[in-house]
Amino acid sequence: MGSRLARLLLLLCSCEYMSGVQAQLRANYYATSCPNVEQIAITQFIAGLAQNVLAPASMIRLAFHDCAVNGCDASILLNGGMNNTDEKLSARNLGIGNLNIIDGMKAAVERACPGVVSCSDLIVLAARDAVRLSGGPNVNLVFGRRDSKTASTAAASKQLPSLLN
Ligand code: HEM
Image (cartoon, rainbow, N blue to C red; front, side, top):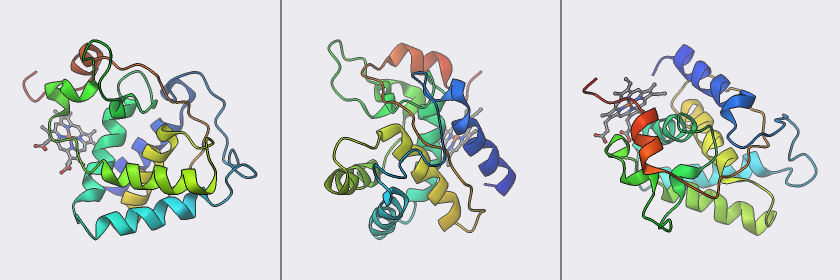
């Protein structure tokens, strides 16, 4: 992916309207509550890469597919909704994978700063690090996205692009 496209994706992920639940995004959002979050995240990413060298592509697509459906709110990660409404059940999300990278980041971040860092911030961080580890630019991020408690298969099918139309 070209570095301009990478920057565009990450800039879009930083817009307030793309942050899912209304949130004030700031570069220093975790400065006191979880100051090492970026270091912890990239360490986990590199550990995950050892298992699958294609993980950077998966993380870039994951950020796109999370943020394009009702903003960056980690709703794509939710499993087993009351009425089977997981976004992953949408055909548009076929091939979404390597989520163990996000699980590893979340587990490590929870050990360091319990209950502080949102999964939606971790998804955007993973996409940023994917670009960086693939030789692209290092894009500075803002943080403070909030996670959704609900997901919608129908919304994913409506808001994500299809190969067919
Ligand atoms: C019309 C728009 C798009 C369509 C129809 C589309 C569709 C697809 C499809 C069908 C795949 C293959 C999934 C698989 O077989 O596992 C894919 C992979 C991928 N897409 Fe898109 N995509 C679109 C836009 C984008 C955009 C804007 C980005 C980046 C921001 C992106 C990033 C990726 C990446 C990185 C992969 C590879 C993921 C992997 O190998 O794990 N796509 N896309």
